[in-house]
Length: 443
Ligand SMILES: *Cc1c(COP(=O)(O)O)cnc(C)c1O
Image (cartoon, rainbow, N blue to C red):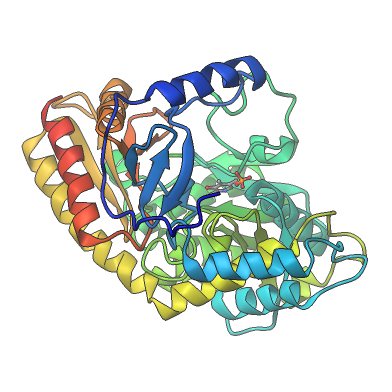
C-alpha cells in the first residue's frame, strides 16, 4: 500500500486509447466471468475517483458527467463521506434493524421526514434499492386504500424487479421476454411538451380521462410518477401537470407517489423535483443520490399511510444497513453545508446556455430540457421530430474516446443526459461541455 496521499485529481487526462490495455485485459476476464446480460457501457475499469474525476486501470483521468446515474451527487471520495463510512465500518456493519436496531436508521428517517415536502406527520422505511422502495410504496398504498390498481405513465422507469418491470414502460432491454408481469398496472399518457404540445392542465385532463374511463378512480390505490422522468428521456412535464394530478388524486382517495429516485436530493436545484411547483406527494421514494454511492433507498410519507401496515409487513435483511445509513447522514449534511441545491441551479444555468446555443446551430438537436444539474438533449432527424438514436449513440461514443463519461436515455434511445457530480468545478464543466459541443457539431 502506498502511504503517500494521492494527488488531487482535478483534470481530464487521456494517456492511452480508451479503453486502454489494462482495461481491455480486465474486460476479457469480465466476458468470461460476468453474465453477458449486463449492459457493457464504457469498459474502462475504474480504480479510484475524486470529485468529478475517475481514474482507470491505465491511469487515464476521465471526466464524470453521469455520477454513476445520479448517485455520487456530492462527488467521489468526499472526505466527510469517507470519514463517516470508515467510522461506521469500524463500529459495526450489520445487526438487522428488525432484530436489534440502531440510531443511524432512525436519524435517516428523521431527515427524510423533515426534507420531503408536506408539514403533516410522516414516517419512513429504508430499503436497499430504488426498485425495492417503489415496490414497498405500492404495498403501503394498496394496504392503506384496500384498492388494487396502480397507474403509471408512458416513458416511466421504476426498476427491474417483477412488479417494477410492470411499472416500467420500455420493453427493450428492461422487460423483453421476462414476463408474465404483475397485474393491475395501468399506463396513461405523460405530459411531453416537445411531442404533444399540450399545456400541463390539458395533459393532466387527458391522463385523468384515461384513468376514469379505463380503470375507475375508486379502483386506484396509487398514482406513481417521476416528477422529471429519468431513463425515459428526462421528460419534464408541462407546468401545471403535476399539481393537477396531485389534486385529482387527493379528491379521489388515491395515494400520490412521487418517484424521486433520480430527480431527488438536490439534483434539480431543490431537495426534490416536486418542490419546484410546490406539489406535496403522499409518499416519496428515494435512493440514488441519497447515500453517496452506498446502497440505500427510502419510502417516506404520511404517517397514517406508512403506519397502517401491520407489524412485520415491511422490512428486509439489509434495508437501512448502518454503513449505508451513516453514508446518507454524511451525504445530506454535505448537501446542506455546501448548498449543493444552489450549486445544481447554477450548473443548470451554464448547461442550458450551452445547450440552447447548440440547438440553434445543430438541426439534429430537437429539444433542450431538464432542470438544474439534470439536463438533456433530444436528437432527431433534422427538420423532423423523428427520434435519432444513432446520433445520440455517436455522441456518447465520441465523448468516451475523449475521456468524458456521458449517458444516453429515452424510450427511443435518442437523448443524451447530463448528471454531473454537483461538486464539479466550473473549469471541469466547461471542459466537458466543450467536448460535447465539438462532438455534436461534428455529427
Ligand atoms: C434508478 C431508478 C429506479 C430503480 O432504482 P434501482 O436502485 O436501480 O433499483 C426507480 N425509479 C427511478 C426514477 C430510477 O431512476
